[in-house]
Length: 124
Image (cartoon, rainbow, N blue to C red):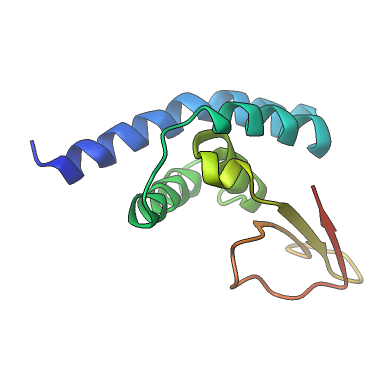
């Protein structure tokens, strides 16, 4: 089997293995204790090249889209932090827009330069 295919399958399985704990934590715990926990797990993860980290992020996004309730930025960030040691050391950011409402908040990793600006931003 081709090395890239093996790498893809390995990462997809790692994401699926991390998903139940991340999802449970996302639904029942606050950000500070949950981020501390997933960072601890992520520090022990396999080091990846930039290309491998992009692949991991793409796999997480594909799996995230298939979950009940649809896409969730917080879940994606937590999953990546729980798996990748570089991401585990990256700041997690939250943004809120004045007025609230649907899609008025966002969570992202500090290394994501595509994130919009928000009226209020917090970091963990």
